[in-house]
Image 1 (cartoon, rainbow, N blue to C red):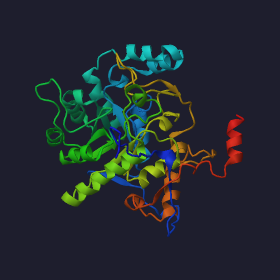
Image 2: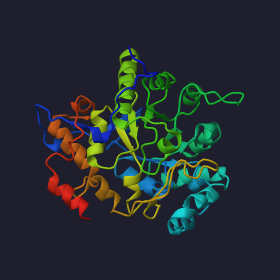
Image 3: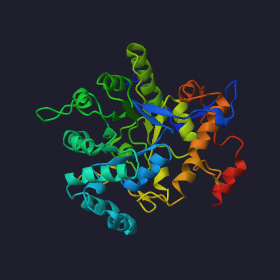
Length: 381
């Protein structure tokens, strides 16, 4: 007889699992990595996070040209300041112990609603797909202005999002009403739960973001103690997607958001059931990113309880190199799309849906087994 108050369920992150090779292999150029969100097609299943250090208008245009998607944060610097470029310099030059306080000060400036339309128009003029993000509390106010200006996709995003939310407002955000009013695809996140994912899909949303607190600049797990490792979270939410698809015939993509550092993490996300990945810090290292080699989470400037930190990520190379190579590094941090194509070829997956069927195994020693000389090299740096 158990004497414990609760039974703990085992959960797995990227470091805990490996993808088992398949019985059929394909040449990498034969695989199809494209995906769809409602009527929108992406040539590559990579979405840049709505983080101020990652996405400005120019980056959104560059990401669109690469075949992916970049989401601009409507609650961020881009909509608070007419010319935010000097602020990025100030943030990059701030001492580490003063960075969070500086961010809190910068973000205390209110959002200027006229800048919402201006940023969307900048992206559209450059030939980019305009995807925008806001927190649930601001959605009813910001979304109509963004869509009127030409936004192609809306992301409603907070650390944890549910279909049912208790608040003091007379009438909170109701997702099925939002979907019917906003005539563009609506993605909602973040969650890590089967039941919540199913409820969100039943509200009519067009995609669900998976992940609570795994980002390199996020400290929600440390500050709040809340989160589920990404492999387990993706598996659970993908199971909800399959159940919903079987019942309704409507396919709603799952997007693994956060904690992805290498091509291996990208591949494991898709083997766990993801239809796309949302990436922040690896793309903050691109020369096109506005953060000047730094990144910080959306919750970092919270006025009373910051749940993120400014991190120095450096500038690794062009967006093209990070996504498509050629890579001259052996740590998996460049040519992320190429890594996915090769991995899919090794398991015989012609497309993303077939990659979902790849076998995952529990293998916590996968990165260290037989790698004694590599580990010695790491230790000598």
